[in-house]
View 1 (cartoon, rainbow, N blue to C red):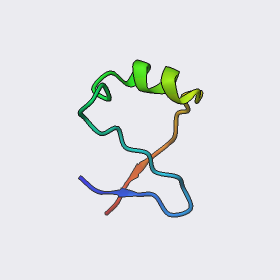
View 2 (cartoon, helix red, strand yellow; view 1 turned 90 degrees about the horizontal axis):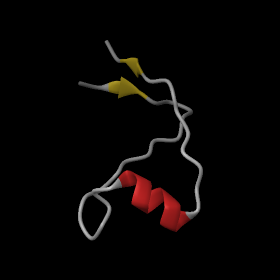
View 3 (cartoon, rainbow, N blue to C red; view 1 turned 90 degrees about the vertical axis):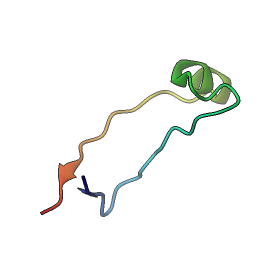
View 4 (tube, one colour; view 1 turned 60 degrees about the vertical axis):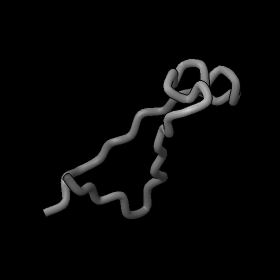
Length: 42
């Protein structure tokens, strides 16, 4: 599936070394989670 992310910030969670738990990674990084809207590309 492809998404149009033009003009948007794209974030990916990588696995390994504790990053399998997004809550743990966010708490260590000191960042607040955000939600974004993605729309399917034709």
